[in-house]
Length: 185
Image (cartoon, rainbow, N blue to C red; front, side, top):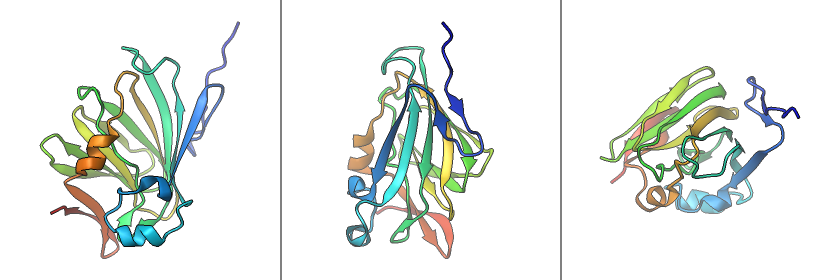
């Protein structure tokens, strides 16, 4: 028997094939993520912020396995803060990850365990290595959908709670029309 592999459209990042899963995140599901709670509160809660397609050929937690996925972040702002992913550390802090940008413009925001935050510009073709022990999230700084491929260890896990509770030490905000990291008080 021949198994068909999944397929990637490298011009869009879209995944297709048996076993591809998809998760969508709307503004209403991202309460507490954006600093401007007033601006967030008057926006349409059903507005799509991002979606993730995943291919997980082994069970989560399997040592030595890899997962593959694509994230699509919509353009938009909540106040002066760009639409972004929730962000996470890996549960197993010694796990790394790769992102490859397929479309749009954005920023990979990285924060180490010492709470030092920096960002890397994302453009089609850019490859980003996410070191272990770094929280990471992505913001769309452009006017079209930002898409990027990801590959991560199947046993890495996702610690969203630490980021939601403590946040990043700086936020990527639109300042004079450009992305700028602004330290949090």
